[in-house]
Length: 330
Image (tube, rainbow, N blue to C red; front, side, top):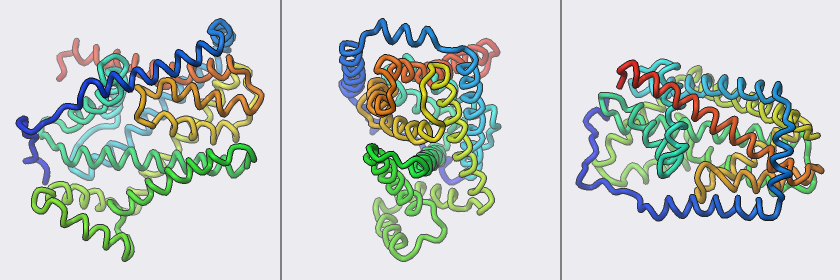
């Protein structure tokens, strides 16, 4: 493929300063410390101890189903660049990413870097892999916002319009990025923006532009499948979060948790903490207490979400990595 020859130059490779990673971790831990200072930790532990195991198990199973679907989505995007992966192979890499993100310095950023190099494979197709990963993340974020907006409009909570503004704002930005880079019928304004961008970098950007054109080669059917593989996991995720609410006897509807989930996940994307720690808990408190949920239970719910969607998946990734190591795989 076009980016087989694109090899990183060690002489110009730059590492992000360690203080940035430390700062993000410190911010997240500081937020958590404040929350646990204000909210008695005994009450949080008591609420978590009362969680019903059957809904939690159902939520865990849903998480693994969504992992399979999102892996299949990324496999299809990588295929546009000639990267031949199986869905199971991509899922193993995704799980390993979450595993390394649990304990390595840099958290999710380190995990993402590991996934990038694993997906690039022996052919070192760095540019195509980067474009596929970018497309995957933007498509997932657009559909996250779309699902959240639909649920918000179904409920129309009068005191949470700020959440809708944030959801729609993020959605507009992501859609604009998709149109500029990947649309086959961009229109005159987007076409003009593309022409301006195409002149940036000259021949040095040729490989990147070619990789983006490869992503545009996806047929309408392939693109539809990719977006279905983005929407379905989000709807399943809503059900999973609702089951976690049921496990803690949180009295909110499926529609309510549908838009709250999108708002909380968007909050965790703000790059000022590691794995969204602190941000997830603060957003959960802000949104769930409006529905009569106690602070202790809201914080317990947030920690339960973190355990099921991050820690459990990371542990599964650790098991797959141990198997690969023992089996002698690279």
